[in-house]
Image (cartoon, rainbow, N blue to C red; front, side, top):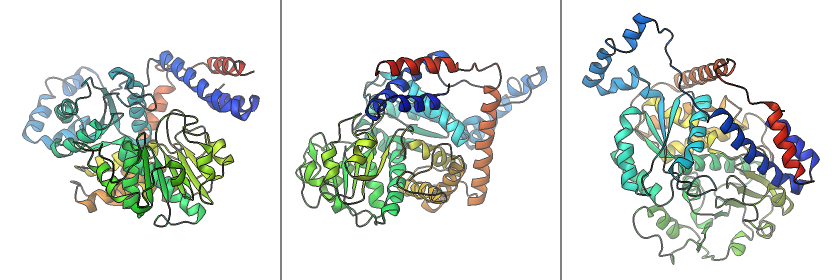
Length: 473
């Protein structure tokens, strides 16, 4: 039995309400067992094709000395003569892991491994997971990333609590020799924006005209708001809430380092001065939640107060703030979550493989908001090549043609933004990205088909499924 078959079996044998909870429990238990079974998700395999005595003297000593000297004399050659130019560091201090918060430094390794796995299979480049013990000290994180930068082509920051994530990102953009971005911010933001753009097409509304409520003011939602404004949303028609209430000029708790954008949000949003989430939800067109793992975090009554053709994004992981069925029953027409077992998965995995590939292929020195918006429009446009509707506003991770398309659009945006150091054409980027992505999947398939990787037994999937179902019968 496969996981997909098990999930379908759970939904067939249990009521809708029971299945909502049971599928989550099943996925938790299967993930824990499968990770232990395989010992994680990554291993290192050499790229070279020969390792006899002669070639070993080329790949290592004495031959490799010429590579060291060449790079010493021209550091740029480290990108072409080693794996540096196609390798990203996935860096976290594990203080804001998914919906689980502070998981201790090694607690984030499973997520960072997963991110690296997707970068290889979907983006066609290598990635190394790095979890740091820096005691929530943004300066220590910055110093560490700067110190390891000579080994990588880009840095992907992940699962770092605020305001440390903002402080570190700002300082690294000024000090690091390679591009640095925070995937929970720009990455999630660009995919949510892509889903929003297509949702608005489905309900025939314009982004400049809609009223948007953001529930949660963390890195994801605050950056989504910034990208939405850059894409044409009216900031005065945006209302953002966190655990302390709505953002507005009366808020004084965003003083200090790292909160620059939140102070700006307090200034430019919430033109009506709303302080009650129920009032803000009334007649709102869009509700975007990125707060804490649910369910029952977003109340169905809030959804019932929204305008006709309401759009609801419940993006918390691992469990959305409101189950899609509850949001639909409350009147929403389009519902998206961060989960792949529901329709309309809003997951930054649709964005970062192509974005970072475009960055690497142009030698970009930064990842700007305009590049993120270009990625969002590329994702949205790619989905439109199929059929979009209430149940399909975004492509899926299995739509592998998406990622070279995004890479090419981001590469062109990097060039127009003046942050590129290489200038391939859009067609050249697309072709190079497509080849690398296909080769990565071929390499994985060859390893997976060998005895080097043991297959996870289908019987174990079935046993875990039966165990889960039995708890609800």
